[in-house]
Length: 177
Image 1: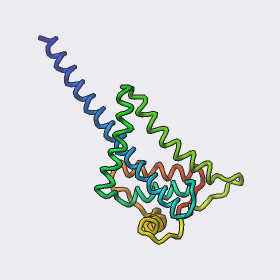
Image 2: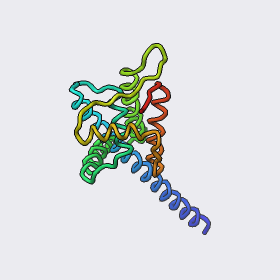
Image 3: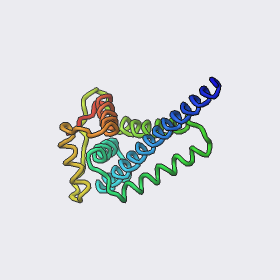
C-alpha cells in the first residue's frame, strides 16, 4: 500500500512541477511580449527622430515608455502572438535551455545596443535623449522620462522590468530625466 501512496505523491509532485513550468513559461512569454513592444516603441522614436538606426537612448526610452504606459488590447494580442512564435520555435526543439537563451539574447541585445551607443571613455554620466516630435507616443515618452524617478511598479513583473532598466542605467552611467 505504501507503493501506491508513493506513486500518488510522485504524481502530485509531477503536477506541481508542470504547474511551475507553466508559470515560468507564462512569465517568459509576458516578458518577451513586453520587450517586443518596447522595441517597437523604440523604432517609432527612432523613425520620428529622422534616423535609420536605433540608439541606446531610443531603447531606454522604449523600455521606460512600455514600463509606464500600459499596452492596448490590440498591442497585447500582437505582442503575445510574437512571443508565442518565438517560444513555439523553441518548443519544437524541446529544450528548456533554449528558452532561457532567448531571454538572455534579448536582454543582451538591448544592453549591447545601449553600450555601443552611449558609453563614453571619460566615465561621465550621459543623459538619455528624447526627440522633439509632437505625436502622442513621442510626447508620452518625454512625460515618462520626466516622471520615471517617481514611478512605483504595481506588480512583481513591473518591478523586475524596472530594476533591469535601473541596473542598466546605473551600470552604464545613463541619466534618465
